[in-house]
Image (cartoon, rainbow, N blue to C red; front, side, top):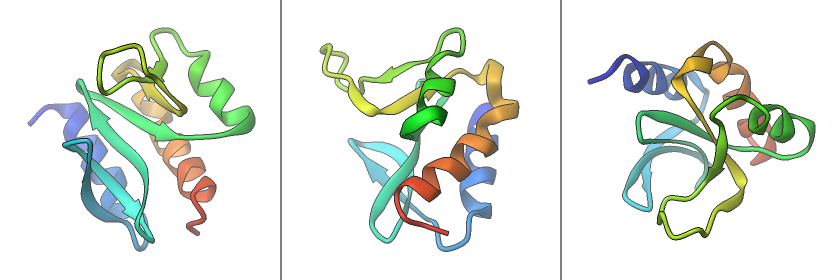
Length: 102
């Protein structure tokens, strides 16, 4: 298990009421059946909106999540490189709030 994957799991497990699950065959965490974070290509992916979405997307190497690899990015989801793992908790909290968690 990579350092990034360990951090992803740690973040997800610390969020109240979050459940480990799968989304498109990728590991994710959900609240009330709604995915809010996932792990893909050794990077963390967040469901975001508004200013925090723009902030995440502005990071060097960040991109819209395209799990199919067929140029069909998911507009609300931002894939954030491990270089910014110090900001993953902040983005995860914003993602929880966005999907209606606490």
